[in-house]
Length: 132
Image (cartoon, rainbow, N blue to C red):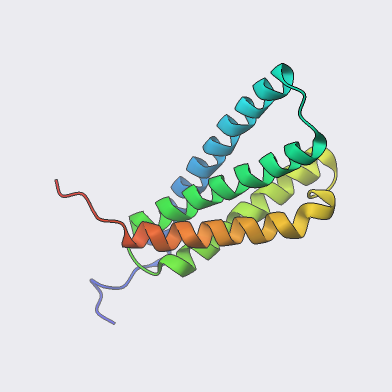
């Protein structure tokens, strides 16, 4: 492969970090909004669980989108790797705070996060680049 067309490992690290941090910030913002909603309204545990899955999916989508947009190719693979990174981070944080990774919904969360990150990766690569 041509040296100019190949990407080295270090070319992937910053986009993955930037995408993951961006997705995590989005989740934190959504959780803050959910906390406000919970204090104002009566929200059942089932709806709260659904909101957590949605927030995880949106955060993973953003992570995959941003990472693949920066890298500029292999959107599905970049999105899936972003999703795996996201699942690992969420699993560690869930284990640290609650002692488990989501109970019965862990498989659902895993699938939603991977699918959303993969979709974000594909859309990130295929979105139009702005010309400066």
